Image (cartoon, rainbow, N blue to C red; front, side, top):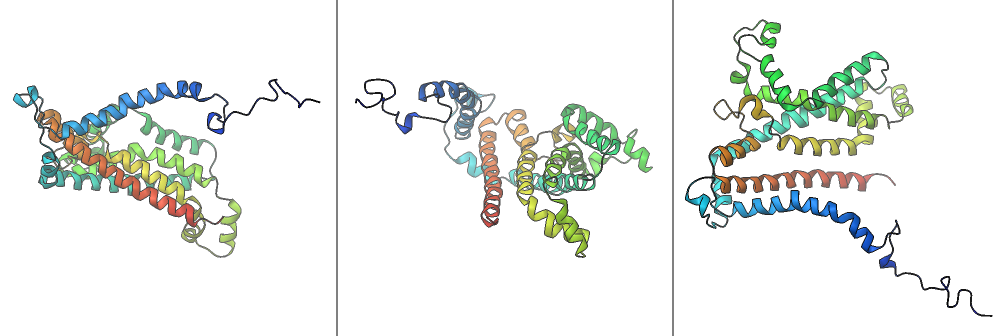
Length: 312
């Protein structure tokens, strides 16, 4: 008796493993599916990044002879930036902005709201969530206008509430103003992430710790934080990168007064577009990208160690 499927389809040799995939599409059709996404990534991410690196190696300007005939200057822009006091000043302000508004402000306030509201139900919880989310989804230009009205020296709502007429918050406390502003508008993301994380903490664990005499802080330290540490690191990574690259403070202060709020995105904008030094600004953009990569690597390393230390 001939082997089953001899000369027929049932006896056909199996396809090589390298030609098979989970969806059963095959390489040609799979490539057709991913090609549009790859083209978009290349057009809007890869090409601009490579073009920025190229500009950073030239003396390109928006006007003048350098605009018509830019010359290669190698790494001069990068070395000049590292020696520039304005760059160091802007980087220091940016780190203050990130630590104050993201690491301490948004992460701390977001967790506090999520923790207080974790067991609450009804209208109060919906109201708090709606208010926090509204601050997050409003356009930045609208939020900036509202805060300028809030902090106005003559007719500002804050001065009226605190009975401090004539206080120019954006001039007298510029960095504090943009930090509080960014906390107010960005806390919603941390709140939602922490609320989801706290929902995965078994209530029985907290009850056991409470019956054992653990205080509220001890419950957080020994029960809650170890279980949501991965969520905390993920949240800190995302909001740190977002805040580091945030241009919104420009809408409030334009980097002033006297460059006291000139965070990196604002510094690059004024240098490259207002002053026309596009090559120098591109070099600083590349340095800013490298700083972002360092921040990401630090957080990812901590997250990887957390996974490795987690019990099997």
